[in-house]
Image 1: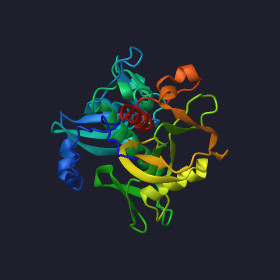
Image 2: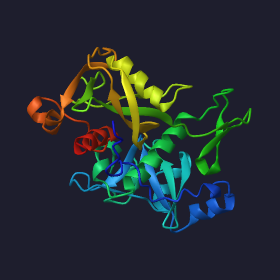
Image 3: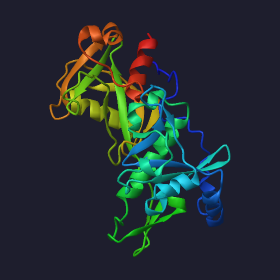
Image 4: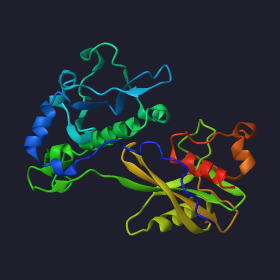
Length: 308
């Protein structure tokens, strides 16, 4: 099986930010950046992002000025330095503690929307910045206490780390690696219908989290075998995609099938089948749906189709 390169970038990649990680410990720099007239703030409200133009099908991210960020009670919630966008400092701010932040903002600022619903429509780079803010704010909210001793933690590194107030343990944002793979036998692709989507007709690639002490290739082979009883041989890397829903990175692969008889795990899948290229090109005719267009699963499938 030949390696199939990625035909285009995945959604949530291509960030325009210089993360400027070396400046996070510079308290004077961060203070100046917070007070700068050029500072931009990316609000997150209960895992949703502020956008306008969603109903018109032309969504765009809405970033706030410092006064607007204060209006949604920035001082009361977590915030973090994300980096520099064309030399302008950019911060994430979580305003989930406010019951409804929209009345606190100027009129016409849009609405808070699930990023996954519009990521494929956002201007280049904006989806990445919103995903960055969403993932980091989720970690900040969920990691207020030390996993070592249980004491309260305080933010460090301009919100990009946490330190225990008791045992001084350092805690950093967590990203869980997950493999996602399209298994093929040359003419057909293996797709599964997940138990997580009982009301959908979607068939997608297989996926699973990497376990401790496991290589990515081993994770691919194990997950495919566990879910469908299909043995796989050659595994080729395709691309990756940040997936902050809530805290993963998807590592995409194509894998070569060494067997064809499927026995699917009913705890993971409602069904699993082999699909021809013609069936995948015309899913409506065959009574199923493909994964969403902003997903790496869709890219794995489309690039396999185009490599024929």
